[in-house]
Amino acid sequence: MAAQSRPREVSTKDLVRTPMSAVVLTVLLVTGCASQPTTRAAGSSLPVPSLSPGSSAASTVPASPAESPIANTAAPNSAPASPATSSLAVASSPRVSAPASSDPCLAPVIETAAPVPVPDPGADSLLVCHPGSVPGRAGPVTLSGNDATNIGKLLDLASLGTATCLYKPDVLLRFEFRGAPTRDEDVEVSSVGCDHPIASVGGHTWLIPQTLADFLSTDAIATGAKFAPPPVPDVTGLSLAQATEVLARAGLTITPDERVTDPLLTPDTVVLQDPPAGPGMTWSGTEVDVLLSQQPASACSVGQLAFDYRGVQYGTGNAFSDLDVRDIAATPCTLTGPISVVGVDAGGHSVTNRLTLPVAADLILTARAPPREVDGSASKDVVMAWIPLEADVRDGPDANGSCADHLVAPKAWLVSVAGEQSAVPNGAGASEPPMSACQGRLNVALPPSTITALN
Image (cartoon, rainbow, N blue to C red):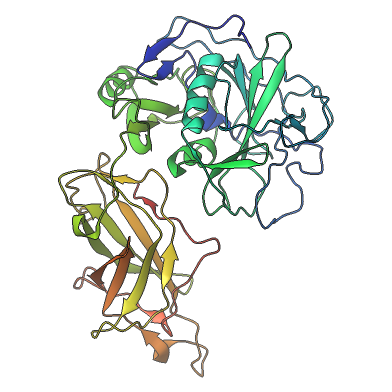
């Protein structure tokens, strides 16, 4: 479908720079949209055993993108989504899940099965809706066609797969086409309560990187400013060094704490930013978070990894510690899962239950990564992973209801990665005391916690 009144595009490799950053969506996904009045709208009965495409919607009027202080083009004006009229279907025809509404975020969810989440990159705009009311954002936002292209390309890099999700989708992305005839194509993103973040369209699901999902849902939930913040420069498409310089001139600092794999982009290219470019976003502070590109890397082997035990801390009757995972080889590597951990005694026999955790997609570790500083901080330009450990140490089978006489302190933690094992001492002197577990039971979250990058 031919696009109308498309803004001028300035390409950096495969990434398009626009007046409004593609990450607008990162901060706007949680735009405080109201529930969609359908049987599968936000606020429907929870939990559900697994995810199938449902309705996600929002209320309030979309904010108009502001002109970027860097680019000279203007984003297209927002346009309400066209009411859909087709009946429920999943195969070749679009799926419509609700009656039409004058509010673009309350319009029916329209999904068409295709080999990729966004088969047509030529959308004129992208409406970002979030189901449910989240304070701090002005409402749903309409992004430019160039932003829609950038976001669509990232989603289309995902591979087909399945995931179990306890809740309805977090975010609705509505790709809007205003050519004759007008049409919408929707993508639902689920992350919270999922064992792996996914994008779903027309009964199909794609496994998207955790870092991208964080920008689309978690990072978007931010408290708005009570005053008008200064304009934020658009740094998408720039290198990390260039973006740092541009933001510094605007009196802002950059936080490059997330990465997503894109083989078509030069490493350390800014893919998304939070807050987005322009003066119209509610935001307070001077830091701009950026999602950077990275090149694919081969899977990590145990031989190129170092595991650092971090001392125990206590709270609510539980003990908490973690194992840092670093790449000490000369080249980056991709940490793959699942990874399991079990406490063992001096003879190598198991004394705790085995904890098995999934690993976030796109988790590429920095080569020759140093350990954390004594104060627990890590360099922002180093990517390492961490394995969380938790156990009850207060309540137990003792006569007084405690567990003082039944605490088990493993000699070491046996970590299994890709069929290989490494033993990590449970404790490192007075500064890193060993962790115990009541009757040797490690706590297991449902769904299991995902091993992610240490931020």
